[in-house]
Length: 261
Image (cartoon, rainbow, N blue to C red; front, top):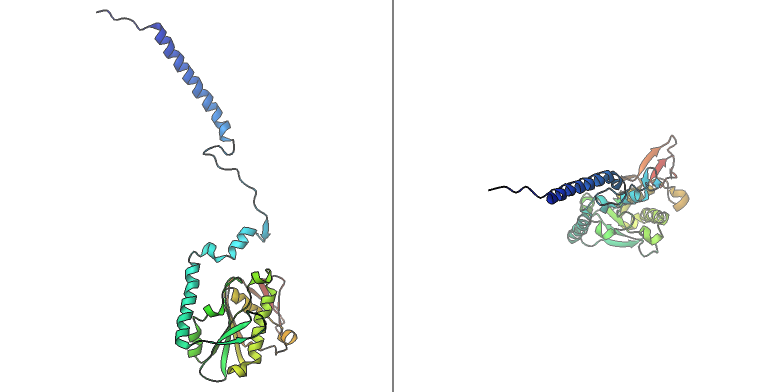
């Protein structure tokens, strides 16, 4: 049986298809680099944005805000602060309710006193933390037993939050200083020894404890310069600098740096 040769028309169509396909591929290949340079094309990285302005040293405003917001880097923050509350409630069940005293006329100007069982005992004034924006004395009693069982009074003070003062820390600094001065003046009535008054603070309260320990007491509050016999500041936001003259104390221009002079 004779084999019929392929039709020339089909052969021409096949060759034309090949040429058209090759041309399309060539066009796509040559256009690819140009398309890759077009911002926002699918699969291409977004164009780099200009760096935000620096708000403090090498930190942008967001980086600075995040540094003061513990929830950014401590996902268990709420669990920890809730533990302060429940542990403080457990302490009050064992020790009883604290004495409540007002050191000023403001609605938040009061303190909780967990008294020792002996008279004329030393007293520690504790300043709670909370990023200057939260926290109350009631939830800061979780370590009161350590002082009471050791024979010392513990006074935990309340004060305003910074948002209540339009972002100004100076009225809060005045509150904690007045609270310490009040404790010194009323120590005998509280059953405490005015010559054994100490100050401590945690986190932002540690910063405020530093404020207390750098106070010109005679000039501002009419009490002796040495009413605070010692202190402990558990805070990472304070840097201490010492100069040659140690007779007094003062704040340096930076709100997070302190110097003794």
